[in-house]
Length: 155
Image 1 (cartoon, rainbow, N blue to C red):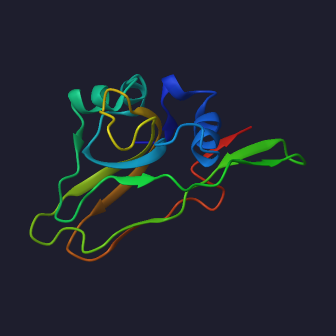
Image 2 (tube, rainbow, N blue to C red):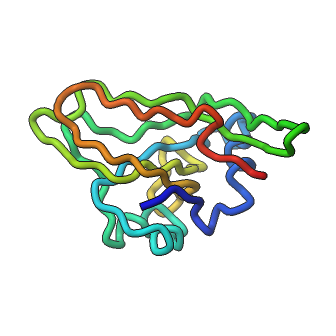
């Protein structure tokens, strides 16, 4: 297991994030999706839409109180001119009372881009990055703590 960038999003993660931050499209958003079954990195990275991810051997979480996190209020990527790095960040995510009645053993957290968070479909959602997220729900709050340098860095 590993972290990575989907091939379709290479070179574009910060542009998608900036588009959401600057209101490029009215209903554009980043979406956080959890997987309880996930392909290995190279096979996962080849998916071009969230519908491709979910039609392969990947299985989205379905624990009690699970929902995708839709983030329409994000900050634009930051640029560090000294070290030549641009970083995209999202806030830490919390699923309250995750599991309990139905639990999952999770493997991956995906950050995706949707041009239409109101009426869009998984065929329109572009997967951006995937991150190891090995945890089992048990009814307590579930925290996805984003790395202090962000979910994505372009160097």
